[in-house]
Amino acid sequence: MKKGLWLLGLLSAVVYSVNFRVGDLLTRVGILSVPPQKIISYLFQLVPLSLFYVLSLRLVRRAEGENGKHAIPGILLLALLFRLPLALQAPDLSSDLYRYLWDGKVQVSGAVNPYLYPPGDERLAFLRDQEIYPNVNRKEAPTIYPAGAQLLFRGLNWAGLSDPGKFKAAALAAEGFTLFLLLLILKELRLPQSRLLIYAWNPLVIYELFQSGHLESFLLPPLLGFVYFFLRGRLVGAGAALGLATSMKLIPALFLVTIPPGKRLKIALPFLLVVMLAYLPYAGAGEKIFGFLPSYFSDPSEIFNPGLIQTGLLWVASAFTLSSPWIRPVLLLLLLVLLLPITRCPEKSPADVVPKLYLTLSAYFFLIYPALHPWYLSWLIPFLCLIPSRAWLYLSLALPLSYLKYLAPDGTMPTWVTWVEFAPLYALLAAEYARVKPVNQRISQWCLETRTQSSTTF
Picture 1: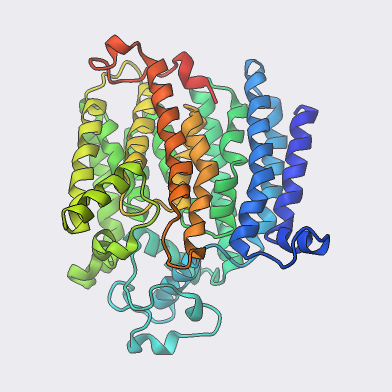
Picture 2: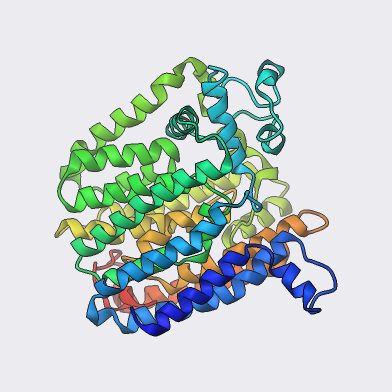
């Protein structure tokens, strides 16, 4: 690995090791009069980390002709150094991890179906402790997490991984599988292996998955397993992996639209089998088996960080005194319109599925509603190793600004944050799309070629 990349990596490791104490350091040297809140400290840290990350990407891009295989050990070593100090700390940006631990405890210690009762229910009072329960969010609501996630929480609790540090240790192990699968996919597609850095050093991924400890650490291995098995022609394994990912978070089911007609049945059958087997242990919950999810989609208080399109629809709803739930069907219809041409793209080789997967996930995040929390975007970052995009990489660095909502006196997102996040995203996406095909072909040709000149820039 080149000296410049080592230098940038070591500087990043120093910043990660500070871990929200940058405000205290600035106070001690007299730059600030009082220590800032942790969210502000987080944003302070992201400034140098984003700069080091972008410079690292430029170095990797210049060296792409060398394949970059020799750089992998250094990239992986530094990626571990970035994650370790965060994994050792209690989560500060989100309390979701405590809900994971609670759901696991309910199943193992209480032998209770987690979909039946919310944490605040008196029937679960005997499970309350001073470490997990006080930090659980939405105590009045049943769990929102699908059955595959519940099996994960149950298994980790049964194995004794019942506190934040141990949970994050398991997440680090899962991250190893993610990085290994990414390397296999890059090799399969004959892309420079140094592109692994796009995911491995991304600040949003590192903070959201290893400081906050979000579930996505465990979602990504089966999601990438689906891609790898499909590229290798192992359709049953691909379907099972996609079913496992979908059982943890339902969105990966969208990838079914990318499968060519002749292969759909071989993938759909194991997919359905895995999803059904995941839900079978919780079937006793009956109609409650979807937990908090229906309320999440319909509750206006759950709206967080909508894009400019979603904000425009919210303005229309307010202007015409319409209820906000009508926005979701409109966005779903727009998503279907975007996905329809993707389903009709011909497949010349298994590798053609990669741009279709990228476009499907991009379309989803473009129209996501009611919330775009920063950790959601971690699903897309691995695909940027295959089809790099300045637009989505920019958003990954700007999205943490959405945490400023929690500091606003009235609890609303500052308008300038929405514009800083999404206006450059839309402009960059439009520029990338314009370079993919000439203007006179864009209406009739909706597919991206697997290896276009524009698909290798970042």
